Every structure is written in C-alpha cells, then in structure tokens.
Length: 257
Ligand code: CAA
Image (tube, rainbow, N blue to C red; front, side, top):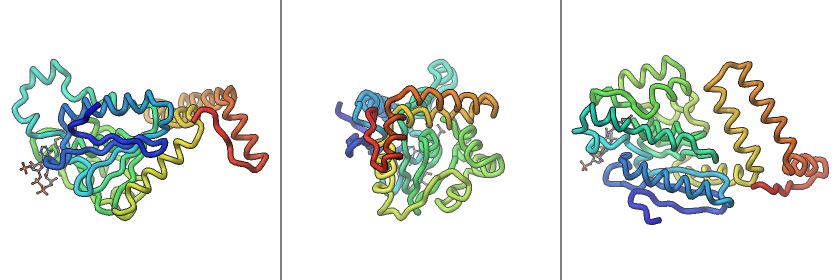
C-alpha cells in the first residue's frame, strides 16, 4: 500500500512507522488514522513482525490532532459520527508498540504516544495537553491515560494550564520509560523492539495483556487474571524451550517468535 502521511518499513523483525506530515508538525488527521490502522493491520498479519516502533521527526512526534481539519466541525456531526473514536483501535494493538518521541508530543500527539506500551523520549521531547488553550479538552484519552500515568496533580496541572513538560520532567513523572540523546533515539527504540521480537510471542502478548489489565480491574481480579495467563503458558512449547535453555546454559530457540 502507498502511504501519503506515513513511512512504513520493516527493520529486522520490527515494524517501523514514521509519521510524515512535516508541513503540519505531523498533526493527526483522518488520513493519518486510516493509514495507521492499515499499517498496524499489515504488521499484525505479518508473522515475522514481533513489535512495532512509531516515531515522528526530530522536531515533532506529533503536534496534536489537526486543528485545521477540526476547526469548522459542528457538534451534531461529530457526535453522530463519534469523531476520533477510531483511535481506540490504535490503542488496542496486540503486538507491543513503542513510541520513540523527539520534539513536540502535544494534544493528540501525546495521546498517541500514551496509546503505545511505553515511550522512549529524546532529551528534546516536550509533552503536553494544550487543548484547553483552544477552548476544548483532550479527546483521544489525554484526561484518562495521562492521569493514570502521572497521577492527578501533574495531570491537572498539564490539562488545566496547557503547559508543556520536558523529557526530564516526563521521566520523573513516570510518563516515559527512558530518556536518551536525540541521535540515539531510534536505535534505542529499535533495539528494545528487536529484543521483544526475539522472545516468545504468546508470552509477550500475554505480558502486555496482564499489565494493561492493571488499569481495568481490582487487584484481586488482576492477580487472578495474571496467574491464569501464567498457568496457560505452561501449555506452550516455548515455556519448555525457555526453561530448558536456561538449565542447559544456552540461548533459547523459541518456536513462536
Ligand atoms: N494542527 C494543524 N496544524 C498544525 C498543528 C496542529 N495541531 N500544529 C502545528 N501545525 C502547523 C502550523 O499551523 C504551521 O503551519 P503553517 O506553516 O501552514 O502555518 C506548521 O504546523 C508549523 O507550526 P508553527 O509555525 O506553529 O511552529 P512553531 O515552532 O512556531 O510552534 C507548536 C510549534 C508550539 C507545536 C505550535 O505549532 C502549536 O502550538 N501547535 C498546536 C499544538 C496544539 O494545540 N495541539 C493540540 C491540538 S487539539 C487536539 O489534539 C485534540 C485532541 O486531543 C484530540
């Protein structure tokens, strides 16, 4: 498929998506959403792909939903079409997705990064939910995912004032997992994704499901869910192989990777 707003490549066993609307600082419009869905679907269908990295440019991961596309929309229309609900599909990717963020990750850009399983940031990254300065509020999960990631105080500060936080503050707050020099960003994200892709896919996907369940349920139910998944992995060849390889002091040769 030919993409207009993305560059879609494979690097080894990793799917790499680069947002590519430089003239709009990678603002997220309906074409980006349509193409991201198609790229994710293709990576999911490709057995060889074990993880996905999504990135932007050095200047901007994405500066938000496309304000020019939204500007003249009317309530009745966006309510009826449930405008931007399609982004929920992006958050539901089953294979792990890493966001590699450099520059601005604002509004929908910050929300897209938070839909990923974890965020690796360049020292230049700036995160924020500036929708309030436009007379609206976050609409792609910012008020919910940011609050879960950084807690109420920091989320309220960002959502109510619209200010940006730098990479150091984002790491301190728990929004990003690592901060690296700008020139290391893509290599670091690809290496993390390649490591994940080298592991047994059922265990990787179940690990992702188990961590995500922590946001949806009580501790008791979450612990039960985790334990049942843990039990089920003993039905896989890869559990036998992984444990045998450890005991025999060799590298595992996983079947389902
Ligand atoms: N939508 C559409 N176009 C955008 C955009 C956006 N979110 N962000 C930047 N652009 C465009 C600018 O209009 C500009 O285009 P022109 O050259 O045609 O004028 C181009 O990208 C470059 O931007 P700037 O000239 O503004 O660059 P800058 O370096 O001076 O400022 C910035 C950078 C601080 C990120 C600034 O562009 C900015 O504030 N952008 C908007 C950020 C924002 O409010 N995001 C939230 C959007 S709403 C949302 O996301 C809702 C939701 O939750 C679903």
